[in-house]
Length: 327
Image (cartoon, helix red, strand yellow):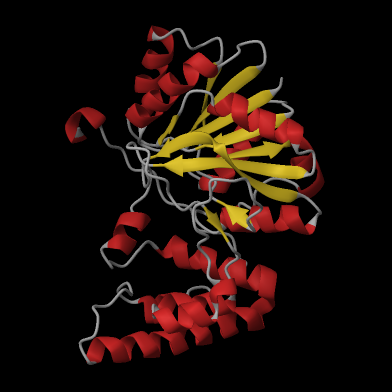
């Protein structure tokens, strides 16, 4: 098998159907296989997806795989990867639409760049406006930049600023969004699967960092285009946009990442740098120069799991809902 495509569904069956419809013209049933993992949605996702697969005759290239638990983004992708043997694996969010030719372009990029272990496409909005999807590593200094939210500090430490501007040419970021990423089989064989200690967030930075430490390159390939609708299976991004308190797993993943790559002391330093930056943004708010960009309770939430940051996440309990009642 040349390509195994892993899609995770969590209560977004209709987004998944749209994604599969965009994939269908690009699928070679002799070389490609989609593993559709339902992450214990606790709704009628399975029946909706089973019916769609039957109705569209997708069963030749789509395997629906129910997970008994919602183990998060990493666990769901790992389950899908283990279900198929392929030369390359495409991790694809349910809230994506694959533009024509994107699959062939990504595979071409992988063939032409044997040193690349991971390749990402250009992510864009439905109208074609590109999204920032390539980044520098999260670091203690980037925490200062993020919490300060102040131009002079961002400029002073620009080499540590996490987002990287959109580029029309291929380049090598430190990490890339896993909303859509192509991973070479040899990378997985060498460094292993994704770290299931992350429920969601920071898992993509973690995996790219491990791959780069093992000698592989991360390559952004803007010739391939994929629409990313953003936030299909979670509320964290919308909460952040509204400055509301996000789910605990965001900060738990943050603590795990910093402790894993910088040590426990590094997590403390990251938190102290964040508080230093927050003092700058707070002064600007007090003099009325700008509204807050900090979420509720962030000052205390950055300390989540500080005593044991590498402990495994507490998985959510499944609750039953019905799409007919919520749509």
